[in-house]
Amino acid sequence: MLLLAAVVGALLIGSVRLSLSGLVRGDSAARALFALRGPRVAMAAAVGIALALAGAALQALLKNPLADPFLLGTSGGAAAGAAVAAWLGALPLEAPLASFAGGAIASAAVAALGRRGGRIDLQRLLLAGIAANAFFSAVILALFSFSSGATTRSMLFWMMGSLSDADPRRLLALLPYLAAGAAVLVSLAPVLNLFLVGEESAASLGVAVEKVKLVVFFAACLLTAAGTAFVGIIGFVGLVAPHLARLRWGNDQRGLLPAAGLLGGALLVVADAVSRTVFSPAELPVGATMALVGVPFFLVMLRRAG
Amino acid sequence: MTGSLEARGVSVRYPSGVALDGVSFRVEPGRVAMVAGENGSGKTTLLKAIARLVPAQGRVDLDGRDVSGMARRELARSMAYLPQSVDLVFPIRVFDLVAQGRAPWHAGGLWRSGGEGPAVETAMRAADVSHLASRDAATLSGGERRRVFLARLLAQEAPVWLLDEPTADLDPRHRKEFLSLLREVHAESRATVLWVTHDVDEALALADDVLFLRAGRAVASGPVSDCLRPEVLQATFGLPARIESDSLGRRRVLFL
Image 1 (cartoon, rainbow over the protein chains, first blue to last red):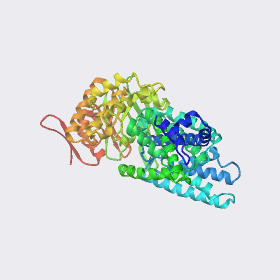
Image 2 (image 1 turned 30 degrees about the vertical axis):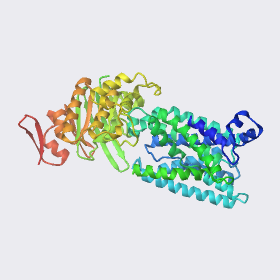
Image 3 (image 1 turned 90 degrees about the horizontal axis):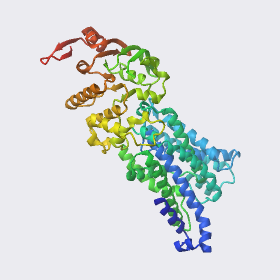
């Protein structure tokens, strides 16, 4: 419902306003605007769902309320992976597989650095995420300064995330990754419930812990990488959406994962609508808008977790 | 399944060194075996090795079957593990936590949550946590939380229980209550129990058998009456000990 309301609202607002009756009647101005805004709003919803699902699943898996694909460096790694592939000339910039490789390497490195004495340490994990993000930002900046054709704007796109290039082709290319990743994570929801008490506890209840961890990391990485490949780095959706969903629908992962996904979709649709209207006709990268919301939220969570 | 448990030459090596060095013992079905020793003697590691929560060498047989050949879920139907202490980060309803004990019994279909009600409710009644069912387990007191995890263990309906210092962080009154509760539920289920503690008096009050560990090796194992000798206690705890009877006829160990 919330997602639907957000989508309709976001279709209507923008630098040119559109009336609901115009949209329903389908007059020509409305149709033109729908063709422009429709894919963008749909893309925002799809990427929001992907990031929120990845964040919710990682929070449960790592038993860590601060887990988020951006904070753990996965988004940065994914963007850097795509940038490296583009620089090598092997692949177009929007290469989900190159993003996936980058994101997977980043997750593995951060998880390894965040471990101490066989268990994941919250502080180390966050520090490793910060280090990874700084490193990947540097990689992306370096690659953009080497390549001649790059504009400041497309670099901003990668670093801060933007939905301004959304079109039906990109949306269609994203959907299979979203469907696959979402199907895997939602089907594992009951197993993720057992992780809420801890890995060892899950193992003692008959869960093949290492296998599940690998599959969940893989799926979360796929969702993050696919989202990042098409719209750049957007943080905090994966942090904020699951927590808001948890407040309303509780922490049973069977209900939480779908709820967090839909809420994440709505959140990013709204954030994008804000990005393109507040300073209209200029636009704010949506990643910046999300960070403005997400950082205070993160600080509150950090205080509680501390 | 009757729950006879036999370990032969169980060893565990951590990166930091040898935690368990060729431990062998046997527990007959329905008996309570206390695993006692100093901090760092390998008690918890032994439980984890038996439950296959840490990689180990050697062999553990359950009713004559090597557990390393069992599927994880089958193992979880045979052995229930009560962890030492659990740090709950996220809210979780007490009922949902106890219902986790049914997970090994679902044939892949964890999505369906029907049918587990009766076993969960029975377990919650037995552990006296029914009134907490809709509370958030993270907000419970230490004693209540212990009982909730005991209920989860009961819901698992396994013939072998592995209890890791179940009374460690409880004050004397809650400890006493928890022990009598445990005695009650054990009388009902007749499970084979492996119970880790460093409180020898607890062993005396409840155990049929003991296994004394020191630095990862078995010092002695067998019925309490055979093993409870001053020289065994000294070899285990590194302190001279005396065994006395108090005015109520209970035996107590006095370390000197």
